[in-house]
Image 1 (spheres, one colour):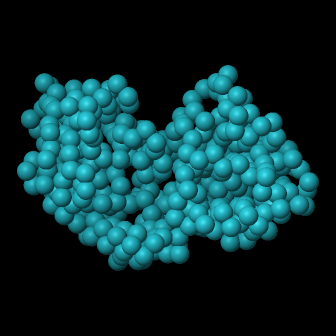
Image 2: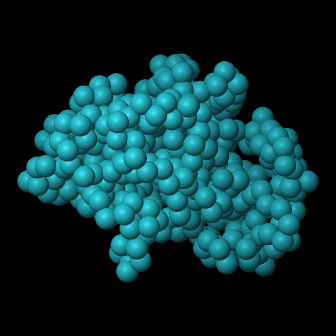
Image 3: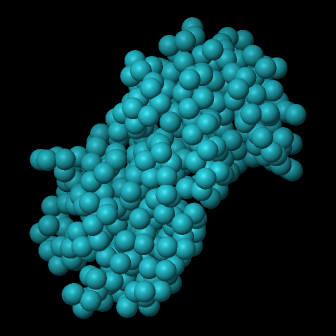
Length: 394
């Protein structure tokens, strides 16, 4: 079921297994990006540790997964190895569980929610959010049942639970009865934006044309509150007459029908651009060129795109709910315009303020840059490595 590819320099000390099933995909969204960045930055604190990455690949990648990872993503430390779990279905609860029973690692890190039913005593799981509990209307009955079951069990089975925000920790404690002593908050990092490219302008023109625009990136789903963003944009256009467009980048997901209905009702539907999934290059180009990044979602476990926008000097409109005030700061430290995500008029007014008030835009941009110092993937990886090390002798 699993194929192993060891480095000749593998150490014979404690073995740390990592569920890397989400880490090495090219079209990464939120959790996949977290898993990728975490494994990438764990290379420093776990450089000399015996780490085994359990991955799911097929075909040529499965024959030489270490070489494939190093060619397409990043170089692995000599002491690390890669094992391919080839099972296509029930990968975690059958494939990874069997690997844990067979290999008996000293520790397991699960970067995304789901612990296999067979696991070492020293298991650390990262819980990103309980969106399906807080906004159940945004999920199918099956999705709610599956996530509630697997994440509740994962929280019970793990020795340590890492949450990506204080808000998520409170939700886990309140909804699942987990004692705070079992949990630790470790903030995500922020991705370093690639240097501006000569192609950026061409990307924007190809996708948007030459009009100013507001930008959203993420799945086009119920939880992201896109239907209200569309209605708010339409009201903004009717009130101001400004030439702005609204660019929605991301794949369609559960609840997209409401987005389509909102767009069909919009008077200015022709100024709404859906790009579908965009590459990293396109995402950064569109982010840089935006008047503002619009992210008033109903619930976020963290909200990484907000920090990405701040990293390229784009002001942010985001929600005053869930973890987002924690991420952008409040009071004197507030680095974004916070709005009630259920208040379409408030979202629309925030768009108008950032489109017409240059002094406000510059102030929000400066505050955004200052906010970024709180978030680092290197720090995130060191704190996660410390959580793993609590239960083993490195």
